[in-house]
Each structure stands twice: as structure tokens, then as C-alpha cells.
Length: 198
Image (cartoon, rainbow, N blue to C red; front, side, top):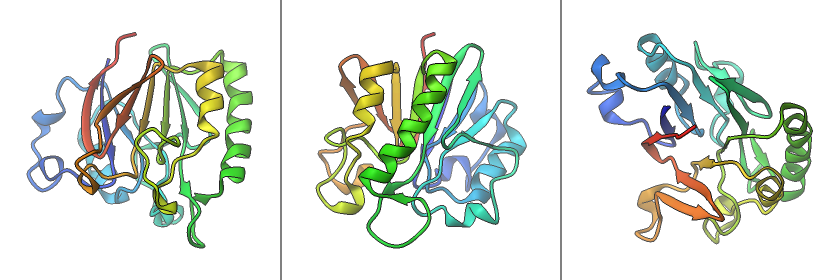
């Protein structure tokens, strides 16, 4: 299954210079947050498969203007062709605002999600906006990752963990792909095409 991961910055090739043929061969689009809802709505008018998303810390406008034709998986589980995809949006709380959570708040959110995972028999792809602590995050509070994600990794061991939030152009040290104990960690900044082996 070919998945197009998106996050943080619209791809000019998929918006300013879009051609429908650029989406051929893609089975699913997943947004890891902080993208204009108009961008996702635009893609949904041309794309035949599902477009899933979690909220980024700058997605407060989604409350009034959610992306048309797209599926919110924040705190939910979505099944597609037997693949189980779970999502948790938001970033570490550094200001008052939508979709910002302390470590403790996110811990409660992941606890609720894990109850659903137990019912559904686990997860294959875990999607978030923020990275996990020590896996592609940064030292400053706004871009610090969550430690609580490791509990989900340990209990359910998803094949893929995709996140956004930490832009690839923040530092030359940022990696697009990382392996964590057999889990493929993807920084979805702008766009990344991934072939998921079922």
C-alpha cells in the first residue's frame, strides 16, 4: 500500500503546480498536522482514496473550517484494507491555544486511545503531530516530544510511526527515517511517499 504522508508545509508540487497525475498509484494520504484545511480539501477533490488527518498545534481553524472530504483520526482508529491506523494530534503545551497538551494531558489521551487499540487488536500505523521524546524532537519546549508514546510502542509495536512538527529545514541533523526497535519512524515534513508492506 502506497501512502503519501504530509505535514507542516504545503508542497508546491501538490498545490501551486498540481497535476492530477501526481496522485496516481497512491492508495492513501495521511496528514500529520499543521496544514491549511483548504490544501487538504483541494487534494480531496482529485484523490479517490481516503485522506486522514490529525491536528497540529496551529490547526485551531479546523474547529470552524475542517478540511472537506477528509477523515479526522485524532483519538480514533481507522481501518483500511485490514491496516489499522490510529492518531493523536497536538504538540507540547507552550502557550494557551488549541491542540497543545502537557505530557500529563497527552498521557491521558494516549491511555484512552490504548483502550480502543485493545478492542481493535492493536495498531499498524500510529500517526501524531508531535514526535516521541528522543526520536526526532528538539530540546526547546515547543518541539519537545512525548515520553508517553513509548508505552504504546512497547505494548502494541506499530510497524510505522509518522509525525510532523519538527521541520526538516530546522537542522541538518533532522532525519527523514529512523528505526526504533523495528518501528519505522517517519518525519512527514512537507511530503513523503512511503510503501507500506502489509
